[in-house]
Image (cartoon, rainbow, N blue to C red; front, side, top):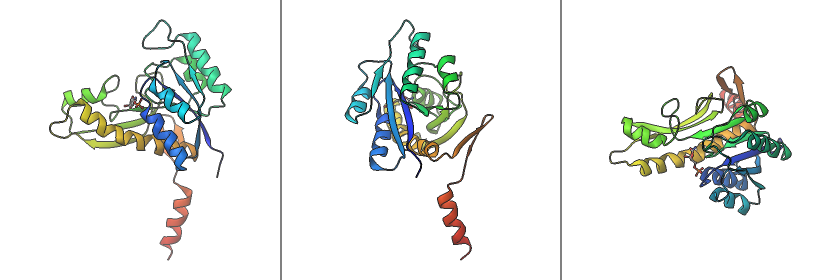
Length: 220
Ligand code: GRF
């Protein structure tokens, strides 16, 4: 098996997606290592989850903007990710928009989880947006991060039904269960070197171990 994928996780809050990743690694179902967890929020519960799992943590200065990091904080973030030999950056509920410093330093190597079927409902409170619109299917998306808001090439999605009587929280809970499985699946694709970006298209290579099995089955 190849060396574990070194993931840098950026968080702002609860950290349930981070926990799903940590749990999958501990269970042996994800060939990765959380090399560092970086937060813009000193009190983020996600940091406690990281510490409990023995992952290094780093807190960035809050700075003067709400929706982005300062240039200096982006530089600090890049240095921290490089210091920990991070190969892939995972935004797990990181509430700030990334700018050139980070995007250029980790071009093609930053992914995000978003609680909607993109390109529908980008931005804040996607679950509320979905309910207000009246869609019957909602879901979650893992995508590459570019300079747009929730706009980069899509890697994988999962769908959930919107049920009669759903409110924002019940829908969010149903989506979150799928998010946790989706992020682990997507990260394992990266760990196995099976994700390739061609222009805007994300190409997922066939799993060679399964391909070999199904190939031999078809000849018997
Ligand atoms: C998730 O719903 C994720 O899709 C969105 O932010 C939320 C983070 O939740 N980007 P958690 O911090 O991982 O629990």
